[in-house]
Image (cartoon, rainbow, N blue to C red):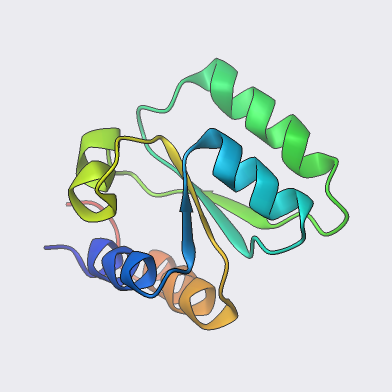
Length: 107
């Protein structure tokens, strides 16, 4: 399994991952979201709605495409979703580091 997906799984088990449109929007609105990740096959219209919602938050989180499908995310998150939010600084930093390296991306 990819290192990024492994880290997402750990993040979920630690209770630091919000899964799905409404939970991500709520986490961003409360200033908890540190990193918002989009699945490759997330609807462009839904993404546009999410981006507008994030712009309205007091402290907008970073956003990134992860290059994995919603089905890939479902394997580690336990739920089919196109967007997730990391609500922990350490996990967010680790994921950003993996995404910047060749080790973390989709294969």
